[in-house]
Length: 181
Image 1 (cartoon, rainbow, N blue to C red):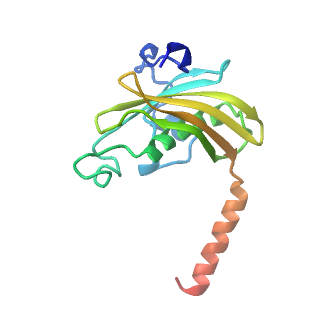
Image 2 (cartoon, one colour):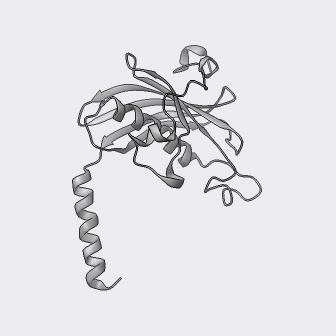
């Protein structure tokens, strides 16, 4: 990949300059336990809306045992979740969308270039390319292992109407209670 196509050259990132660790990320992202897919945020550029961070891939990941036995490959959907969580962190921290919670709105032009395995550090970079406050944020993302491009694409984030979701969950819980399940 030509340097001009990179959101940020991963070789230039100071991965020891942690802006947000797991606790700092939790302030803005609701994912917990095995769904937390970020280790640290190491770069933020609020002028150009660029963010970078990483996920350290361990042998304790929930998917290692089954994807695939004797050849653990990080599932593409988990790579996408990691990228989405970084974009969500940046959007929420800087209140770009004006939403209490951001969810997946779509994916485009996703390409998986190299495998990601336990022991790797997946370095992620994202750049917000379009923003309609209250409606959508469009983000170009790239993921690297040892400075080689492993995954890239465009993801869209949309506001999640948490009041509606909480109401639906309460209704479902009440229905289960009435049905004895």
